[in-house]
Length: 283
Image (cartoon, rainbow, N blue to C red; front, top):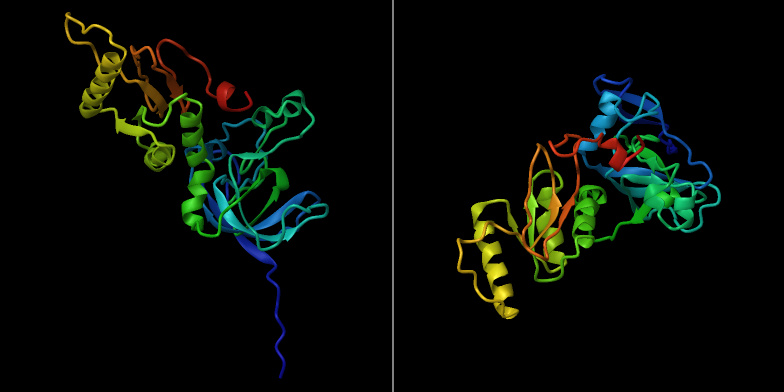
Protein backbone atom coordinates (compact mmCIF):
# COMPACT_ATOMS: atom_id res chain seq x y z
CA UNK A 1 0.00 0.00 0.00
CA UNK A 2 1.39 3.37 -0.96
CA UNK A 3 0.57 6.76 0.49
CA UNK A 4 0.57 9.95 -1.48
CA UNK A 5 1.18 13.38 0.04
CA UNK A 6 -1.60 15.85 -0.57
CA UNK A 7 -0.64 19.52 -0.89
CA UNK A 8 -2.69 21.98 1.11
CA UNK A 9 -4.93 24.10 -1.08
CA UNK A 10 -6.79 26.25 1.45
CA UNK A 11 -5.91 28.38 4.44
CA UNK A 12 -7.65 30.31 7.20
CA UNK A 13 -7.72 34.11 7.20
CA UNK A 14 -9.13 36.77 9.52
CA UNK A 15 -10.75 39.35 7.26
CA UNK A 16 -12.82 42.49 7.56
CA UNK A 17 -15.65 42.13 5.01
CA UNK A 18 -16.62 45.81 4.98
CA UNK A 19 -15.93 49.01 6.95
CA UNK A 20 -17.18 48.78 10.53
CA UNK A 21 -17.84 45.04 10.36
CA UNK A 22 -16.50 42.42 12.75
CA UNK A 23 -13.67 40.07 11.91
CA UNK A 24 -14.58 36.92 10.04
CA UNK A 25 -12.57 33.68 10.07
CA UNK A 26 -12.95 32.21 6.59
CA UNK A 27 -11.14 29.81 4.31
CA UNK A 28 -9.47 30.89 1.09
CA UNK A 29 -7.35 29.26 -1.54
CA UNK A 30 -3.64 29.55 -0.86
CA UNK A 31 -2.45 32.18 -3.38
CA UNK A 32 0.37 31.76 -5.88
CA UNK A 33 3.07 34.45 -5.87
CA UNK A 34 3.17 36.66 -8.96
CA UNK A 35 6.29 38.17 -10.52
CA UNK A 36 8.37 40.13 -8.02
CA UNK A 37 6.49 38.66 -5.05
CA UNK A 38 7.01 35.88 -2.54
CA UNK A 39 4.60 33.78 -0.56
CA UNK A 40 5.20 33.77 3.19
CA UNK A 41 4.08 31.09 5.60
CA UNK A 42 3.10 33.32 8.51
CA UNK A 43 4.47 32.27 11.89
CA UNK A 44 3.44 35.34 13.89
CA UNK A 45 1.71 38.68 13.31
CA UNK A 46 1.54 41.51 15.82
CA UNK A 47 -1.59 43.51 16.52
CA UNK A 48 -1.16 47.25 15.92
CA UNK A 49 -3.53 50.10 16.71
CA UNK A 50 -3.28 51.14 13.05
CA UNK A 51 -5.25 48.02 12.14
CA UNK A 52 -8.27 50.08 13.14
CA UNK A 53 -7.90 51.90 9.80
CA UNK A 54 -9.03 48.70 8.13
CA UNK A 55 -11.59 47.84 10.78
CA UNK A 56 -13.36 51.21 10.53
CA UNK A 57 -12.57 52.05 6.91
CA UNK A 58 -10.86 55.31 7.83
CA UNK A 59 -7.98 54.89 5.35
CA UNK A 60 -8.90 56.03 1.83
CA UNK A 61 -9.05 53.53 -0.98
CA UNK A 62 -9.20 50.26 0.97
CA UNK A 63 -10.71 47.42 -1.05
CA UNK A 64 -12.77 44.92 0.92
CA UNK A 65 -12.74 42.26 2.11
CA UNK A 66 -9.30 43.01 3.52
CA UNK A 67 -6.97 41.04 5.80
CA UNK A 68 -5.12 43.39 8.20
CA UNK A 69 -1.71 42.87 9.74
CA UNK A 70 1.63 44.63 9.15
CA UNK A 71 3.86 43.10 11.83
CA UNK A 72 4.52 39.83 10.05
CA UNK A 73 7.21 37.23 10.72
CA UNK A 74 7.43 34.02 8.74
CA UNK A 75 9.26 31.88 6.24
CA UNK A 76 9.29 32.20 2.46
CA UNK A 77 7.23 29.34 1.10
CA UNK A 78 7.50 30.07 -2.63
CA UNK A 79 9.00 32.78 -4.83
CA UNK A 80 7.50 34.32 -7.94
CA UNK A 81 9.08 34.89 -11.33
CA UNK A 82 12.08 37.19 -11.38
CA UNK A 83 12.84 36.89 -7.66
CA UNK A 84 16.56 36.19 -7.28
CA UNK A 85 17.60 37.79 -3.98
CA UNK A 86 15.27 35.74 -1.79
CA UNK A 87 14.75 32.00 -1.62
CA UNK A 88 12.36 29.46 -0.17
CA UNK A 89 13.01 28.63 3.47
CA UNK A 90 14.43 32.08 4.27
CA UNK A 91 13.08 33.82 7.38
CA UNK A 92 11.58 37.20 6.55
CA UNK A 93 9.38 39.92 7.95
CA UNK A 94 7.00 42.54 6.57
CA UNK A 95 6.24 45.80 8.37
CA UNK A 96 4.16 48.91 7.70
CA UNK A 97 6.17 49.78 4.59
CA UNK A 98 4.71 47.39 2.07
CA UNK A 99 6.45 48.50 -1.10
CA UNK A 100 7.14 51.44 -3.40
CA UNK A 101 7.01 52.13 -7.12
CA UNK A 102 10.71 53.02 -7.43
CA UNK A 103 10.04 55.64 -10.13
CA UNK A 104 8.43 58.68 -8.46
CA UNK A 105 10.58 61.72 -7.50
CA UNK A 106 10.70 60.63 -3.85
CA UNK A 107 11.85 57.11 -4.73
CA UNK A 108 14.47 58.46 -7.12
CA UNK A 109 15.90 60.41 -4.17
CA UNK A 110 15.91 57.24 -2.08
CA UNK A 111 13.03 58.44 0.10
CA UNK A 112 10.93 55.30 -0.28
CA UNK A 113 8.87 56.04 2.82
CA UNK A 114 7.25 58.98 1.03
CA UNK A 115 6.64 57.22 -2.28
CA UNK A 116 3.71 58.74 -4.16
CA UNK A 117 2.33 55.23 -4.62
CA UNK A 118 3.34 53.81 -1.26
CA UNK A 119 1.91 50.42 -0.36
CA UNK A 120 1.03 49.45 3.20
CA UNK A 121 0.87 45.79 4.18
CA UNK A 122 -2.60 44.88 5.41
CA UNK A 123 -4.10 48.00 3.82
CA UNK A 124 -2.97 48.10 0.18
CA UNK A 125 -2.99 44.29 0.05
CA UNK A 126 -3.82 41.47 2.46
CA UNK A 127 -1.57 41.32 5.48
CA UNK A 128 -0.51 38.85 8.13
CA UNK A 129 -3.80 37.85 9.74
CA UNK A 130 -3.71 34.69 7.65
CA UNK A 131 -1.69 31.53 7.33
CA UNK A 132 -0.05 32.51 4.05
CA UNK A 133 0.41 35.95 2.52
CA UNK A 134 1.94 37.49 -0.59
CA UNK A 135 4.35 40.41 -0.41
CA UNK A 136 6.50 42.31 -2.93
CA UNK A 137 10.23 41.78 -2.50
CA UNK A 138 10.85 45.45 -1.64
CA UNK A 139 8.76 45.01 1.52
CA UNK A 140 10.88 42.16 2.91
CA UNK A 141 13.46 42.23 5.68
CA UNK A 142 15.56 39.27 6.81
CA UNK A 143 15.02 37.87 10.31
CA UNK A 144 18.00 36.30 12.12
CA UNK A 145 17.72 32.61 12.93
CA UNK A 146 18.14 33.19 16.66
CA UNK A 147 15.17 35.55 16.97
CA UNK A 148 11.80 34.01 17.83
CA UNK A 149 9.02 34.89 15.37
CA UNK A 150 6.68 36.13 18.10
CA UNK A 151 9.43 38.42 19.41
CA UNK A 152 10.39 39.63 15.95
CA UNK A 153 6.91 40.53 14.69
CA UNK A 154 6.27 43.67 16.84
CA UNK A 155 9.73 45.00 15.99
CA UNK A 156 8.62 45.43 12.37
CA UNK A 157 6.30 48.32 13.25
CA UNK A 158 6.36 49.34 16.91
CA UNK A 159 10.03 48.50 17.21
CA UNK A 160 11.21 50.35 14.14
CA UNK A 161 9.03 53.34 15.06
CA UNK A 162 10.61 53.53 18.51
CA UNK A 163 14.08 53.07 17.06
CA UNK A 164 13.59 55.78 14.45
CA UNK A 165 12.35 58.21 17.10
CA UNK A 166 15.58 57.66 19.02
CA UNK A 167 17.75 57.60 15.90
CA UNK A 168 16.46 60.95 14.63
CA UNK A 169 16.27 62.65 18.04
CA UNK A 170 19.94 63.61 18.05
CA UNK A 171 20.46 61.87 21.40
CA UNK A 172 23.92 60.44 22.00
CA UNK A 173 25.03 57.54 24.21
CA UNK A 174 24.69 58.61 27.84
CA UNK A 175 21.93 61.16 27.16
CA UNK A 176 18.72 61.04 29.15
CA UNK A 177 15.63 60.01 27.17
CA UNK A 178 12.11 60.61 28.49
CA UNK A 179 9.24 58.50 27.21
CA UNK A 180 5.66 59.68 27.60
CA UNK A 181 3.15 56.91 27.13
CA UNK A 182 3.79 53.21 27.76
CA UNK A 183 1.72 51.49 25.10
CA UNK A 184 2.44 49.31 22.11
CA UNK A 185 5.33 51.60 21.17
CA UNK A 186 6.46 52.89 24.53
CA UNK A 187 6.95 49.49 26.11
CA UNK A 188 9.67 48.75 23.56
CA UNK A 189 11.65 51.84 24.43
CA UNK A 190 13.71 50.09 27.11
CA UNK A 191 15.31 47.36 24.97
CA UNK A 192 15.84 49.78 22.08
CA UNK A 193 17.20 52.48 24.37
CA UNK A 194 19.63 50.11 26.04
CA UNK A 195 20.92 48.83 22.70
CA UNK A 196 21.90 52.33 21.62
CA UNK A 197 23.42 53.25 24.99
CA UNK A 198 20.89 55.79 26.21
CA UNK A 199 19.66 56.40 29.72
CA UNK A 200 15.93 56.48 30.34
CA UNK A 201 13.04 57.24 32.58
CA UNK A 202 9.31 57.89 32.49
CA UNK A 203 7.10 60.94 32.79
CA UNK A 204 7.09 60.78 36.59
CA UNK A 205 8.59 62.88 39.43
CA UNK A 206 11.66 60.64 39.73
CA UNK A 207 12.55 61.48 36.13
CA UNK A 208 12.18 65.18 36.89
CA UNK A 209 14.69 64.93 39.72
CA UNK A 210 17.09 62.96 37.58
CA UNK A 211 16.76 65.38 34.69
CA UNK A 212 17.52 68.31 36.97
CA UNK A 213 20.61 66.55 38.29
CA UNK A 214 21.75 65.89 34.72
CA UNK A 215 21.21 69.52 33.78
CA UNK A 216 23.04 70.71 36.91
CA UNK A 217 26.06 68.53 36.15
CA UNK A 218 26.08 69.81 32.59
CA UNK A 219 26.15 73.39 33.81
CA UNK A 220 29.02 72.67 36.22
CA UNK A 221 31.05 71.11 33.43
CA UNK A 222 30.59 74.23 31.35
CA UNK A 223 31.46 76.39 34.39
CA UNK A 224 28.25 78.34 34.26
CA UNK A 225 27.47 80.22 37.48
CA UNK A 226 24.73 78.66 39.64
CA UNK A 227 21.31 80.26 39.61
CA UNK A 228 20.49 82.32 42.69
CA UNK A 229 16.80 82.61 41.93
CA UNK A 230 13.98 80.13 42.53
CA UNK A 231 14.60 76.51 41.54
CA UNK A 232 14.30 75.85 37.84
CA UNK A 233 11.22 74.07 36.50
CA UNK A 234 11.56 70.50 35.27
CA UNK A 235 13.63 70.28 32.15
CA UNK A 236 14.40 67.14 30.18
CA UNK A 237 17.63 67.12 28.21
CA UNK A 238 15.95 65.26 25.38
CA UNK A 239 12.47 63.94 24.89
CA UNK A 240 12.91 61.67 21.92
CA UNK A 241 9.81 59.50 21.88
CA UNK A 242 6.26 60.32 22.84
CA UNK A 243 2.98 58.51 22.34
CA UNK A 244 0.27 61.12 22.51
CA UNK A 245 -3.07 59.65 23.56
CA UNK A 246 -4.61 62.93 24.72
CA UNK A 247 -3.99 66.67 24.29
CA UNK A 248 -0.72 67.49 26.00
CA UNK A 249 1.59 70.45 26.37
CA UNK A 250 5.33 70.06 26.94
CA UNK A 251 7.80 72.78 27.80
CA UNK A 252 11.40 71.90 26.98
CA UNK A 253 13.63 74.46 28.61
CA UNK A 254 17.09 72.93 28.32
CA UNK A 255 19.19 74.32 25.43
CA UNK A 256 19.90 70.79 24.20
CA UNK A 257 16.29 69.71 24.47
CA UNK A 258 14.26 68.29 21.65
CA UNK A 259 10.91 66.64 21.03
CA UNK A 260 9.90 63.91 18.61
CA UNK A 261 6.46 62.36 18.42
CA UNK A 262 5.94 58.77 17.30
CA UNK A 263 2.78 56.74 16.92
CA UNK A 264 0.37 59.68 16.88
CA UNK A 265 -3.20 58.44 17.17
CA UNK A 266 -5.26 61.12 15.48
CA UNK A 267 -6.17 63.27 18.45
CA UNK A 268 -5.30 66.94 18.21
CA UNK A 269 -4.09 69.40 20.79
CA UNK A 270 -5.38 72.89 21.42
CA UNK A 271 -2.55 74.73 19.73
CA UNK A 272 -2.38 72.81 16.45
CA UNK A 273 -5.22 70.90 14.82
CA UNK A 274 -4.64 68.76 11.76
CA UNK A 275 -5.91 65.40 10.47
CA UNK A 276 -3.31 62.82 11.40
CA UNK A 277 -3.46 61.07 8.02
CA UNK A 278 -1.83 64.14 6.53
CA UNK A 279 1.28 63.28 8.53
CA UNK A 280 1.42 59.48 8.48
CA UNK A 281 -0.11 58.53 5.16
CA UNK A 282 -2.25 59.52 2.22
CA UNK A 283 -4.76 62.19 3.03
